[in-house]
Image 1 (cartoon, rainbow, N blue to C red):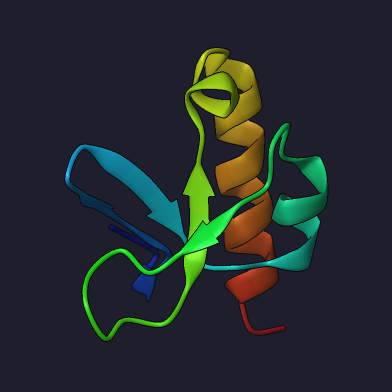
Image 2 (cartoon, one colour):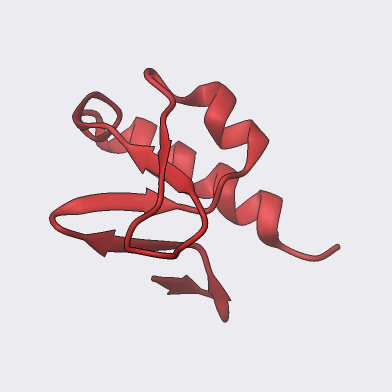
Length: 71
């Protein structure tokens, strides 16, 4: 998935993975990392609990994007 030209996440095997940004990890209910596909670098795995509230999920994605945007 891309936003403003930045790759920030991927959906693989019905799971949402995002780039491992510290602020997003800190805001997650149950932080976990896993590679989304073989030989990939670990990404944050968004749990069903983190996806249950659309506002919380939007905040997590916002934190990822803020952490990836070059200033």
